[in-house]
Amino acid sequence: MRVKPHIEIMVGFLLLLSIVALSFLAFKVSGLKSYVNKPETYLVHAEFDDIGNLKERASIRLAGVRIGQVVKIHLNPETFRADVVMAIYRKNNLPIDSSLRILTEGLLGTNYLALTPGYSDQSLKEGARIEETHSAMILENLIGQLLYRFKDDDKKDQKKHSKIEHKVVIS
Image (cartoon, rainbow, N blue to C red; front, top):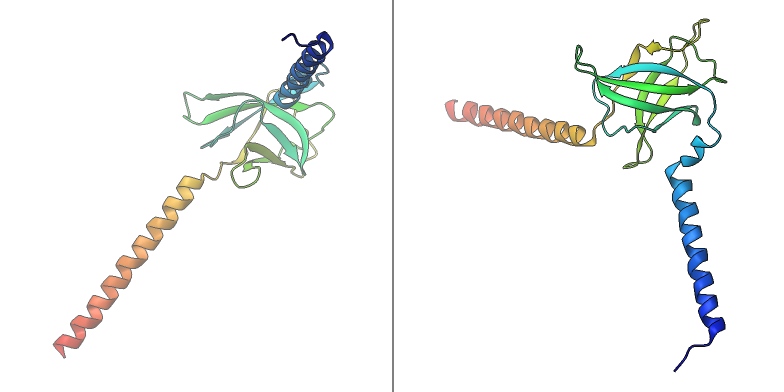
């Protein structure tokens, strides 16, 4: 039994349309649009004790507005801290005493850098270093500290109860 040619053409057209739509979606999600009309930027450095799950191309935000992105992350061999190189859009004139924090989108989302502006009259320039940084909050570390604290509290309660029982027996 032979399928009608117009049905084959229609299936082929829908298949082609879905491939184009998926390709468009992949480019949109990957952020490759920034290569087409790339804004002028200047590079700034910052060092962190722990960057958590921060990745290259993570956004840098000020008051929730994207003002740049992470370009490179590497380990500083002298300080053994993570050196983060950022590209800040030139249209943003930021004070030199600004600070950076690593935050997470939602509870388990991706990490990004949140910039808090300082009060200096001097502005960040090409190659400047942001000195005040706050490392990422690692969920596993927080849970471990909480469990350790509960365990430590249980030991203190046990010691307190054993001292009370001991005093009662002696009297």
